[in-house]
Image (tube, rainbow, N blue to C red; front, side, top):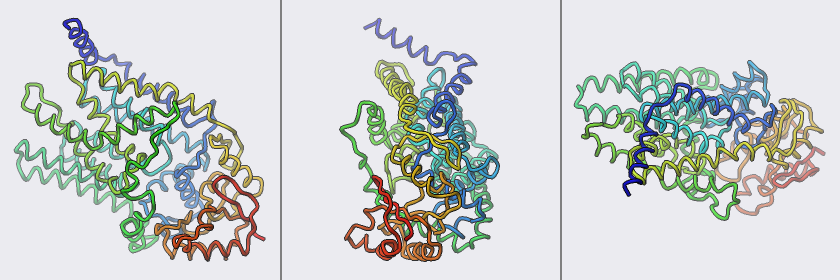
Length: 516
């Protein structure tokens, strides 16, 4: 027993011991080595995915042609993701290489921010555990060109600024980054701001600070947020009109967002669990951890902090900051807590978990070892699995690209041989527009049978289809073959397509129809 106790103390002493200067740059260098093959088929071919990220790449491409969100095409999010890729495409050209390189850079930025925050809360070698968990359990699964990525990075930057001190200047700068977060995802920046404001108020009350000083700090945080967000949205309000902008980013999410099957509380715990293939077992463990610990770990962190506050070695106030922000972010996704949304807001959990098990003891050492082992289970086979799942490469208008989805490759190859960049393609075509340089004249990129697609959007789509007579229309067959009342909403569109188009190709999840 005594030998076991000494062994545990020696492990704890090592974890809290000094870290060489080269350890941090070496860790970040290894981060790039790990992220690069997640986005590129070796040696340098970008991997093209047909997930939701292409929605925003399509919109950035439309902006290159002179169209603007809200005025010329529908968008219910704030326009930050469109703007960032519009700028990248404007400078470097609309290529898949730019997209993949930006994701590697974003992953490195997020890991660096995690390491910065971790160093202010933990010490010794333990500071590398949170960024390792973030890097291996979160990023490879959701590292896509989506608004969640950039809004989460902005929130992390705001937390990193305040993790040591909460001066008015730092709070104002944190408010700026919360505004940037809202420029990408309107709710994320707002909820993060609420979490930071609640923490500043709690800190002022707990330290019995002067009331005026506390409110000055709160005012600096909120005023910076409001001014910067207003300045970022002003150009779009001038182009589209303030009423149109408000209806798009406020009214539509409130009234229609929850009508989509993936955007309501019923998606919680809805992801398939078992059976899973052996190579997805770490993902299954990650799923269990997130659903079990969010937001429970934050309340445990608050309880542990309050209990240890009176001890000789007081915990850093940054722990409470992480808990406040973590709880606020959990509240933000509570409306639609699907697995990948929980992953985007889980970065405070990586810090809090490591902080809760930072002390000596066999249980803590075992938990640290288990977390590190889980991270390594993702780290070691991750790049190998991505590289060996690449099924084909092809030259497209966005450059030479690699595919991991054979059906997606077949669709792009079929359309590429029959279209030219600039041609119209409508329907469920959003997966192909960016890759092939095609255009969708409708305001919406896809139609749904749910209330998420409004009658006005259906009418606009049908009108644009009649006006432009796109050579090809891509359809989800389940939308037109259904007999439900929901499917009846798209019946005018389906009837027009059946009358004026003929089916020329069928794939596993869509059909292609050609103008007669």
